[in-house]
Amino acid sequence: MATIPDGGRPDEWARHWRHPGVPGLDLLRARYVRHSFSRHSHEGYVLGAVRRGVEDVVVPQGTVRARPGTVVMINPEVPHSARAGAPEGWSYATLYPSSRLVARIAEEETTLRGTAAFGETIVEDESTARLIGAVHRAAEEGDVLAADSFLRIAVARLLRRHGRALPASTPRPAGARTAAAAREVLLDRMAGPPSLEQLARELGTGPFALLRAFKTAYGMPPHTWLTDARVRTARRLLESGTPPGEAAVAVGFTDQPHLNRHFTRIVGVPPGAYQRERARTYKTGRPDRP
Image (cartoon, rainbow, N blue to C red; front, side, top):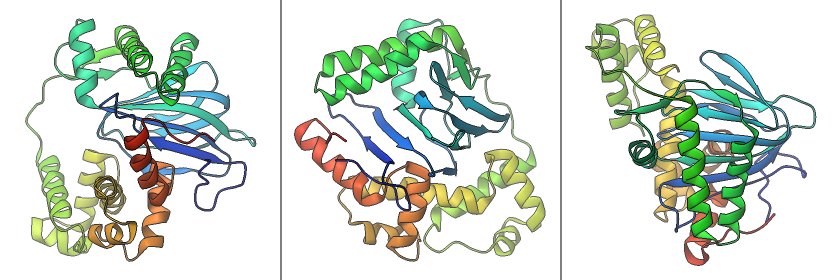
């Protein structure tokens, strides 16, 4: 069954799901025309392959144009947004492998040690783009062996060709320490966060200094980061069976429509559809077809 994003068009559909036989991987296959993704980040990696049309992906370095035959690679916690790059929109298949899964593949199949990262955001790689689509097809057909195999081959190939090891962490400057402290406050008080002025006062700094430090550290101002964090937490609540309305209140949204709007702009599907897909695929191992 096709899932229409809130406010979307009848020719838009999306499916965000997880196959129980391939742990550590989320899958999104979609066609978007007017839909756009607000600025957000992921705990794991993003590997996307456009099948038709053009997707404009906005990352800290600028905007990249993803077309058929390219692969978009986004590292964990890198803020990004996306929108249609052509009037007809774009259709694509995206893999969201966890950091743990990518680390295991890197250790087994590459010489990378430490935290693996991709050195480029977009590459021309038609064969790997086809592999990303093959992961989706195999998972949808219930062929777990093929889906897992294609996934590992694709990730290993991209790591060997475009991977690098992140440098060891260095002592953080005062601004980064302030941003990290602000982040912890927002996580602890997600449902009732302080104002920017209150937060700055609690941390012994000024509002504008806090804004600058937080954006430097996390690529987003505090209010944008908090919306993303609320959606992440709502996803976990939905996966545990919490009704969307209750999840909305628990993470600090005023009501379910407020959650619906932000959730769809970040995840790509409404929270109700996200929860139903998770529940169904864990029972059957397969998603509905569009």
